[in-house]
Amino acid sequence: MSALTSEHRGTPATPGESAPAAPAPAPTPSRFQTWLLDRWASLAAPAAGRRVPGTMVVAVAALAVGIVAVYVTTSSGINIAYADSQSHLTISRRIFDSKAPGFTQLGTVWLPVPSLILVPFVQNLWLWHTGLAAGLLGLVCLMGTACGVYRVAARVGLGRSARIVGVLLIIANPSILYLYTTALTEPVLILCMMGCFAGLAHWVTSRRNLSAGEMMVFTGLPAAGATLSRYEGWVLVVGGSLVVLIAAWRRKQELRYAIKMAAAFATLPAVAIAWWLAYNFAVYSNPLEFLNGQYSAANLQKATADAGLLAYTHNAGLTLWTYNWSVLETAGLVTVLLGIAGAIVLAWRWGLSNKALLVWVMGVAYGFSLLSLFLGQTHMNNDHSLPENWWNSRYALAVIPWLAVLAAVFVDSLTRVPRVAPGLVALVGLALVLQTAWWATDPARSSVIAEADGYVQLKAASGATDAARFLHDNYDGGQVLMDESAAGSALLPEIGIPLVDYYNRSTGDLFTAAIASPATHAKWVFVSTADAPELSQTGVADLVYDKIKNQSSFQTAYRVVFEKGDYRIYERI
Image (cartoon, rainbow, N blue to C red; front, side):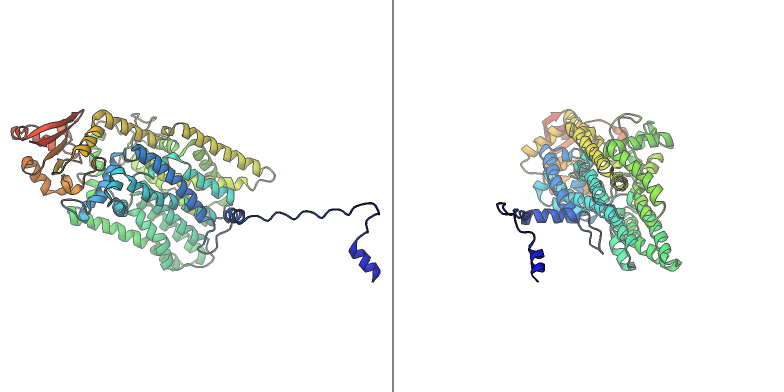
């Protein structure tokens, strides 16, 4: 017993020597440090059912970055540089604020979901005037896009480093950050597409057989939103249905089950498309009004095509050259190279597995854009196209989330290389830092921002900016006659007057009556004096100016109060 006790007590200290000091206890981490460690750990945790740990961390990071972007663009006014952005803001507001309010104010030029979602944000006149209404919606879209990329990467089994790289390629991209502060339609499209892909990722990787109802809600519903946001969404339905059909067949080897699940995915998008055709028929007596009507893209760019300025039409080489340069100048060189490397890894390691099919189908927007450019349905130029100018570079934006997921696949493969993985991942991180720093020194290196800067300069040179500011500052009541659909005159948010005070094309017969007799209808007349009667068939000539320029009675009833460049404002005497 004494020997056992002596063993447990250890060897007694030699006389004259002090006993060794006990090791200091490890410091207890603070509650905040514990919280941070938990959040960091969540970014590597596997998905569990419908829950994907780390999603909230990504959402908060995207929100913080997005708030800075909204502040920068809104305070400078560049968020409403694109004429289309001001038109979208106007469409959303005029559903309620107009001389002819109603659902038909959606028109047919653009699909309706982006305008409908924007409606609550534009009811405040200041939010509409500054464009901040679109920025608030853009914050939601940015968080959803970043979370969608993260959740897809987590669902397919990628690690923390890969997930973070994928998210950074979204929230550190100036093209995305800028466009998500505008009222353009791409943010809503990409949000819906990423919602669909995230839902498909859950279904493909789930061990539980999800029901047809769950398929319809978590994948079909966002796909329906995409189909009514931009026409890339229509191709998404085809590609997504094919993936569901293949994956469902592989799961049960039952044709009936495969068809049922594919139908569950496609039903809501099909209903959405059918509704859009019915709407066009009911309002315009032509279900394809959006495709071949007066204000369709094909008709509006007819003059450009007739002038031979769509050089890439039916030319595969120029189509690839033009579009891929736009992808490069919106996504960034590092993003594109990582995406290409990820595509190689995906094809080599994953083949045509269900997870691989999910990632491949994310490229439907790339295929659609190439096809529409080749067929002449899309007009896009950049500094390497024929001709060289900036036009619709933003059409490449929907490709960036796909490149981000492909890049994540590549980074994940690097983390599996023995011994050198940390160094390889660090090199990728350094490349991302350098790309971000390169953009930060000149954001206009992004073709989307370069195009916006060009519009700002063009509006200033033509007099549009000063004309809008003059009417905003001097308006003291009364009605305004203005053709806001004329080229260069999409300025209503910039002017900032309630839309109920306007006679314009959207007011239909009221506009026709006001043009016929301006003095009995309007105190103010705002016109673009660019005399282009050859444009009247395409709908971009100023119908007000074409009518009043030869009316002697108009000249005696009104006086010019502003004139600069192509713009003139009259006030009734």
